[in-house]
Length: 274
Image 1: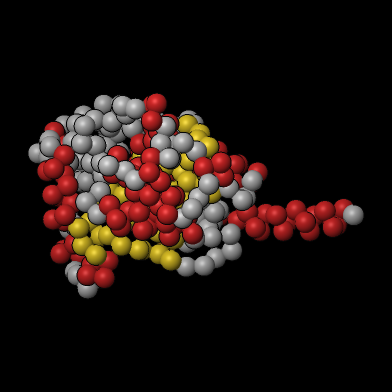
Image 2: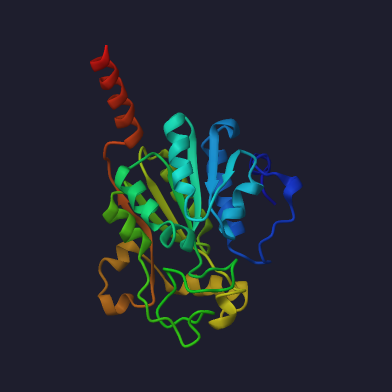
Protein backbone atom coordinates (compact mmCIF):
# COMPACT_ATOMS: atom_id res chain seq x y z
CA UNK A 1 0.00 0.00 0.00
CA UNK A 2 1.47 3.42 -0.95
CA UNK A 3 2.29 5.78 1.90
CA UNK A 4 0.11 8.80 2.58
CA UNK A 5 2.78 11.06 1.08
CA UNK A 6 2.62 9.09 -2.17
CA UNK A 7 -1.19 8.86 -2.17
CA UNK A 8 -1.33 12.64 -1.94
CA UNK A 9 0.28 12.74 -5.40
CA UNK A 10 -2.39 10.53 -6.99
CA UNK A 11 -5.60 11.48 -8.77
CA UNK A 12 -7.50 8.58 -7.29
CA UNK A 13 -10.66 9.52 -9.20
CA UNK A 14 -8.88 8.49 -12.41
CA UNK A 15 -8.46 4.90 -11.25
CA UNK A 16 -8.57 2.10 -12.28
CA UNK A 17 -5.70 2.75 -14.69
CA UNK A 18 -5.58 1.59 -18.30
CA UNK A 19 -2.40 -0.47 -18.00
CA UNK A 20 -2.57 -4.23 -18.32
CA UNK A 21 -2.46 -6.11 -15.00
CA UNK A 22 1.19 -6.64 -14.09
CA UNK A 23 2.53 -3.88 -16.35
CA UNK A 24 5.84 -2.49 -15.13
CA UNK A 25 4.72 1.10 -15.69
CA UNK A 26 3.00 1.11 -12.30
CA UNK A 27 6.30 0.24 -10.60
CA UNK A 28 7.95 3.21 -12.30
CA UNK A 29 5.14 5.62 -11.43
CA UNK A 30 5.35 4.57 -7.76
CA UNK A 31 9.12 5.15 -7.80
CA UNK A 32 8.63 8.58 -9.39
CA UNK A 33 6.05 9.57 -6.78
CA UNK A 34 8.27 8.36 -3.94
CA UNK A 35 11.11 10.45 -5.36
CA UNK A 36 8.95 13.59 -5.61
CA UNK A 37 7.56 13.10 -2.11
CA UNK A 38 10.95 12.43 -0.50
CA UNK A 39 12.45 15.53 -2.16
CA UNK A 40 9.66 17.65 -0.74
CA UNK A 41 8.54 18.83 -4.18
CA UNK A 42 5.36 20.92 -4.28
CA UNK A 43 2.60 19.69 -6.57
CA UNK A 44 1.81 23.23 -7.70
CA UNK A 45 5.45 23.73 -8.79
CA UNK A 46 5.97 20.33 -10.40
CA UNK A 47 5.22 19.62 -14.06
CA UNK A 48 4.90 16.11 -15.49
CA UNK A 49 4.85 16.10 -19.29
CA UNK A 50 4.34 13.19 -21.69
CA UNK A 51 3.63 12.38 -25.30
CA UNK A 52 1.55 9.46 -26.60
CA UNK A 53 1.66 5.80 -25.63
CA UNK A 54 1.04 3.53 -22.66
CA UNK A 55 3.76 5.24 -20.62
CA UNK A 56 2.47 8.66 -21.57
CA UNK A 57 -0.82 8.07 -19.79
CA UNK A 58 1.07 8.36 -16.49
CA UNK A 59 0.58 12.14 -15.95
CA UNK A 60 -3.17 11.59 -15.94
CA UNK A 61 -2.85 9.72 -12.66
CA UNK A 62 -0.51 12.23 -11.00
CA UNK A 63 -1.91 15.17 -9.06
CA UNK A 64 0.51 17.86 -10.23
CA UNK A 65 0.69 20.26 -13.16
CA UNK A 66 0.47 17.75 -16.00
CA UNK A 67 0.66 18.01 -19.79
CA UNK A 68 -0.35 15.17 -22.14
CA UNK A 69 1.00 16.30 -25.51
CA UNK A 70 1.57 15.00 -29.03
CA UNK A 71 3.56 11.93 -30.01
CA UNK A 72 7.31 12.51 -29.77
CA UNK A 73 6.96 16.22 -28.99
CA UNK A 74 6.65 16.25 -25.21
CA UNK A 75 10.22 17.51 -24.73
CA UNK A 76 9.33 20.55 -26.84
CA UNK A 77 6.44 21.38 -24.51
CA UNK A 78 8.61 20.67 -21.47
CA UNK A 79 11.34 22.95 -22.83
CA UNK A 80 8.88 25.80 -23.30
CA UNK A 81 7.52 25.34 -19.80
CA UNK A 82 11.00 25.35 -18.26
CA UNK A 83 12.01 28.46 -20.21
CA UNK A 84 8.83 30.26 -19.19
CA UNK A 85 9.23 29.39 -15.50
CA UNK A 86 12.71 28.10 -14.60
CA UNK A 87 11.72 27.59 -10.94
CA UNK A 88 9.46 24.66 -11.82
CA UNK A 89 10.53 21.04 -11.42
CA UNK A 90 9.92 19.50 -14.85
CA UNK A 91 9.81 15.75 -15.43
CA UNK A 92 9.19 14.34 -18.90
CA UNK A 93 7.88 10.77 -19.17
CA UNK A 94 8.44 8.96 -22.47
CA UNK A 95 8.28 5.52 -24.01
CA UNK A 96 11.10 4.17 -26.17
CA UNK A 97 9.22 4.86 -29.42
CA UNK A 98 8.05 8.25 -28.21
CA UNK A 99 11.62 9.16 -27.22
CA UNK A 100 13.86 7.58 -29.82
CA UNK A 101 11.73 7.27 -32.98
CA UNK A 102 9.46 10.21 -33.79
CA UNK A 103 10.92 12.14 -30.84
CA UNK A 104 14.55 11.23 -31.42
CA UNK A 105 15.57 14.60 -32.82
CA UNK A 106 14.05 16.48 -29.86
CA UNK A 107 15.74 14.06 -27.46
CA UNK A 108 19.27 14.54 -28.75
CA UNK A 109 18.89 18.31 -28.85
CA UNK A 110 17.53 18.43 -25.29
CA UNK A 111 20.67 16.49 -24.29
CA UNK A 112 22.84 18.88 -26.31
CA UNK A 113 21.30 21.97 -24.71
CA UNK A 114 21.53 20.49 -21.19
CA UNK A 115 18.23 22.02 -20.16
CA UNK A 116 17.18 21.33 -16.55
CA UNK A 117 14.57 18.64 -17.25
CA UNK A 118 14.49 15.05 -16.03
CA UNK A 119 13.56 12.60 -18.79
CA UNK A 120 12.26 9.25 -17.54
CA UNK A 121 12.24 6.72 -20.38
CA UNK A 122 9.99 3.69 -19.92
CA UNK A 123 11.72 1.29 -22.29
CA UNK A 124 9.65 -1.81 -23.01
CA UNK A 125 11.26 -2.42 -26.43
CA UNK A 126 7.95 -2.36 -28.32
CA UNK A 127 5.06 -0.17 -29.41
CA UNK A 128 2.68 -1.55 -26.81
CA UNK A 129 -0.38 0.65 -27.29
CA UNK A 130 -0.62 0.55 -31.06
CA UNK A 131 -0.22 -3.15 -31.77
CA UNK A 132 3.23 -4.48 -30.94
CA UNK A 133 5.35 -2.98 -33.71
CA UNK A 134 9.16 -2.86 -33.61
CA UNK A 135 10.60 0.13 -31.74
CA UNK A 136 14.14 1.60 -31.90
CA UNK A 137 15.09 -0.50 -28.85
CA UNK A 138 13.65 -3.90 -29.82
CA UNK A 139 16.48 -6.45 -29.41
CA UNK A 140 17.92 -8.24 -32.43
CA UNK A 141 16.13 -11.54 -32.94
CA UNK A 142 12.99 -10.57 -31.03
CA UNK A 143 9.57 -10.96 -32.63
CA UNK A 144 6.99 -8.24 -33.19
CA UNK A 145 3.98 -7.66 -35.41
CA UNK A 146 6.23 -5.88 -37.92
CA UNK A 147 9.01 -8.45 -37.51
CA UNK A 148 7.34 -11.88 -37.71
CA UNK A 149 10.68 -13.50 -38.58
CA UNK A 150 12.73 -11.60 -36.01
CA UNK A 151 14.32 -8.15 -35.78
CA UNK A 152 17.57 -7.50 -37.67
CA UNK A 153 17.94 -3.77 -36.88
CA UNK A 154 20.45 -3.13 -34.06
CA UNK A 155 18.76 -1.32 -31.15
CA UNK A 156 19.74 2.07 -29.79
CA UNK A 157 21.60 2.16 -26.48
CA UNK A 158 19.66 5.15 -25.14
CA UNK A 159 22.07 5.83 -22.27
CA UNK A 160 25.10 5.92 -24.57
CA UNK A 161 23.15 8.11 -26.97
CA UNK A 162 22.18 10.54 -24.21
CA UNK A 163 25.70 10.73 -22.81
CA UNK A 164 27.24 11.28 -26.24
CA UNK A 165 24.69 14.01 -27.04
CA UNK A 166 25.54 15.94 -23.86
CA UNK A 167 23.19 14.95 -21.03
CA UNK A 168 24.85 15.57 -17.66
CA UNK A 169 23.19 12.79 -15.65
CA UNK A 170 22.41 9.41 -17.22
CA UNK A 171 21.37 6.24 -15.39
CA UNK A 172 19.62 2.96 -16.07
CA UNK A 173 17.66 0.51 -13.92
CA UNK A 174 14.99 -2.13 -14.50
CA UNK A 175 11.61 -2.64 -12.87
CA UNK A 176 13.24 -5.46 -10.91
CA UNK A 177 15.17 -2.76 -8.97
CA UNK A 178 12.46 -0.28 -7.88
CA UNK A 179 14.63 1.34 -5.21
CA UNK A 180 17.29 2.10 -7.80
CA UNK A 181 14.65 3.73 -10.01
CA UNK A 182 13.64 6.01 -7.15
CA UNK A 183 17.27 6.82 -6.32
CA UNK A 184 18.15 7.69 -9.93
CA UNK A 185 15.06 9.83 -10.46
CA UNK A 186 15.87 11.76 -7.28
CA UNK A 187 19.43 12.37 -8.45
CA UNK A 188 18.13 13.33 -11.88
CA UNK A 189 15.80 15.95 -10.42
CA UNK A 190 18.57 17.29 -8.20
CA UNK A 191 20.98 17.52 -11.13
CA UNK A 192 21.25 21.01 -12.63
CA UNK A 193 20.95 20.03 -16.27
CA UNK A 194 19.36 17.46 -18.56
CA UNK A 195 18.96 14.12 -16.80
CA UNK A 196 18.03 10.82 -18.41
CA UNK A 197 16.78 7.89 -16.36
CA UNK A 198 16.11 4.89 -18.55
CA UNK A 199 14.01 2.18 -16.94
CA UNK A 200 13.81 -1.21 -18.62
CA UNK A 201 10.23 -2.35 -18.20
CA UNK A 202 8.08 -4.96 -19.88
CA UNK A 203 5.04 -5.29 -22.08
CA UNK A 204 4.03 -8.88 -21.51
CA UNK A 205 0.93 -8.34 -23.65
CA UNK A 206 2.61 -7.27 -26.90
CA UNK A 207 6.29 -8.16 -26.49
CA UNK A 208 6.16 -10.93 -23.93
CA UNK A 209 3.62 -13.24 -25.51
CA UNK A 210 5.60 -13.22 -28.77
CA UNK A 211 8.93 -13.82 -27.04
CA UNK A 212 8.21 -16.51 -24.43
CA UNK A 213 7.73 -13.95 -21.63
CA UNK A 214 3.96 -13.95 -21.44
CA UNK A 215 3.66 -13.52 -17.64
CA UNK A 216 4.73 -10.40 -15.75
CA UNK A 217 6.82 -12.48 -13.36
CA UNK A 218 8.69 -14.04 -16.29
CA UNK A 219 9.86 -10.58 -17.28
CA UNK A 220 10.83 -9.55 -13.74
CA UNK A 221 12.86 -12.74 -13.35
CA UNK A 222 14.55 -12.15 -16.71
CA UNK A 223 15.56 -8.62 -15.69
CA UNK A 224 17.08 -10.01 -12.50
CA UNK A 225 18.99 -12.65 -14.43
CA UNK A 226 20.44 -10.40 -17.15
CA UNK A 227 21.14 -7.23 -15.16
CA UNK A 228 24.82 -6.41 -14.67
CA UNK A 229 26.12 -3.44 -12.71
CA UNK A 230 28.22 -0.92 -14.61
CA UNK A 231 31.20 -1.59 -12.37
CA UNK A 232 31.08 -5.28 -13.26
CA UNK A 233 30.32 -4.61 -16.93
CA UNK A 234 33.40 -2.39 -17.26
CA UNK A 235 35.56 -5.44 -16.60
CA UNK A 236 33.66 -7.77 -18.97
CA UNK A 237 34.42 -8.54 -22.60
CA UNK A 238 31.93 -7.50 -25.33
CA UNK A 239 30.95 -11.11 -25.98
CA UNK A 240 30.24 -11.59 -22.27
CA UNK A 241 27.88 -8.61 -22.32
CA UNK A 242 25.72 -9.93 -25.14
CA UNK A 243 22.13 -10.19 -23.93
CA UNK A 244 22.94 -8.35 -20.69
CA UNK A 245 21.40 -5.13 -19.39
CA UNK A 246 23.95 -2.80 -17.83
CA UNK A 247 22.45 -0.91 -14.89
CA UNK A 248 23.86 1.97 -12.87
CA UNK A 249 24.93 5.57 -13.33
CA UNK A 250 26.44 6.00 -16.78
CA UNK A 251 27.21 9.72 -16.63
CA UNK A 252 27.38 12.34 -13.87
CA UNK A 253 29.12 15.56 -14.85
CA UNK A 254 28.72 19.32 -14.70
CA UNK A 255 28.14 21.57 -17.67
CA UNK A 256 26.47 24.99 -18.10
CA UNK A 257 22.68 24.69 -17.92
CA UNK A 258 20.68 26.02 -20.86
CA UNK A 259 18.03 28.15 -19.13
CA UNK A 260 20.60 29.96 -16.98
CA UNK A 261 22.63 30.76 -20.10
CA UNK A 262 19.49 31.90 -21.93
CA UNK A 263 18.49 34.27 -19.13
CA UNK A 264 22.00 35.75 -19.01
CA UNK A 265 21.78 36.25 -22.77
CA UNK A 266 18.53 38.20 -22.32
CA UNK A 267 20.13 40.35 -19.62
CA UNK A 268 23.07 41.16 -21.89
CA UNK A 269 20.75 41.98 -24.78
CA UNK A 270 18.69 44.31 -22.61
CA UNK A 271 21.85 46.04 -21.45
CA UNK A 272 22.93 46.62 -25.02
CA UNK A 273 19.53 48.05 -25.93
CA UNK A 274 19.62 50.38 -22.91
